[in-house]
Picture 1 (cartoon, one colour):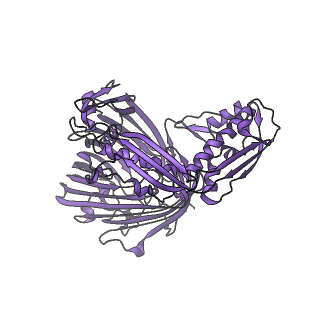
Picture 2 (cartoon, rainbow, N blue to C red):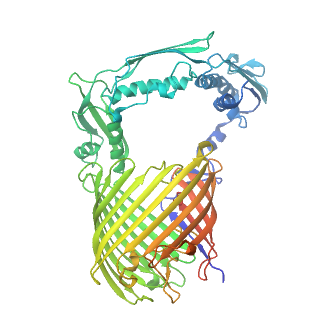
Picture 3 (cartoon, rainbow, N blue to C red):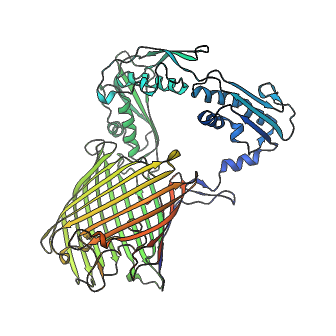
Length: 633
């Protein structure tokens, strides 16, 4: 008999709304847009046109001009009346002129003929044929280069490495370089930022003179910077709090009164407040001017979110049955963003209903942010669960207390103590057993990915170590894992991404019979080797049963392609192996392969994967389907 596995996920907060051609989930419009529906409804006098578009250029210039033109971009859509069509045409003069300036063309000529007349000279109440012929003709002219460049009041140097700002010359603001208008704007930003990094928060561009010399085809630029007054951080006020402690908000920013003003410190302060998860909106505003004492006041303006939140979800698998889960969250227990989250789950529900076969899990996590520094959290958790597995039934209670530290934007870690008491009954391999463990845990992460849910570049490395003592058998155990992921984007807008993942684990200690089964390694399932059931890859105990192993090696390769703004596809290959007493032998590697589709949303891509086991065993399914939010890794 053929077997398969199907997994689906539903999340509370889902609402259906809008016309039949679309639906809304989490406030996101799928398969259509409310704005587009509204736009179609208000076009009472649709006006169409035939378009001839001649740019007199190729490549980058041609693409930029077409991209800037609304007439070109909306050529398949009707305009709203004659006035709307003429407004669109007249607006194209400025848009395409800006596109030429951004590429260094300052002597271009643009003509937009609507029904044979220049669009700029046609009154809005004119009568036009339907459809009307529109001819756009552009002569870009010559490309200009930078001539004489003058900068007055440039920030002094040298400066400490953390205050360095890339000079304008590095982006092409040099005599002889292509005179793109964007380079002038970026140069001004860098000149101002250089002063602000030195403690001059009100630095600004005092004057700018730009002269296009057409005979020499050069652009002469003179920029004067006004650094303003030097300032240190002054008094910090808080506005908009309802339940939050204002003093805690100030302390959590890490801003120190009397310290030199630094835009990097302000950015970090915003990130720290955002991480609290308490505010619907926040901003940090400086006073309009630096006072005579040089201490610049700041005001933190916040709007708090609702105190409580809850959610429910469900999953279903033809092999694993139905699972229902939910959580309740309090964001701000005592006024300093203390979070309490309670979770509950019931799984393994199938027909006929047998409650003794259900899996149960209950737990709570308390988080106290800013325990020692603004980047240090105290985290305490306790949970109890009952899991009915093929070889045994596990009943356990566990807890952890520790600190989590964010060291930099890319490096974080955590350490603490943990305990667990477990009873394993009806174990077909080793019989009933009880284990009690206590010890330490450690975790370190390096994360340079550009996104958590849909990365296109960067690295992710995570390592864990758990030194434990087991009291029933009086053994010392050490469990460690190391996982690495990397991503490489190719093509326009990184629409092709190659992703790779590898994970290894090892457990040092006594024989397998004296190790808690939940500490042993298994593989298989949606987050491991797709195409195989969850925890189905392990060690054969000689009686046809699969137990956990002392060593783990698994990995994945994915090729991801994005077809358009909404849809993409994936091809993948997963592999994994678990060993009892020797490091995994690649000859015994279990492989799974498949394809998937992605539907991109603001929450991340919705994922549907179909996987086939390439080393199919007697008890393995023929295929498996996986549904989720975000890429698989």
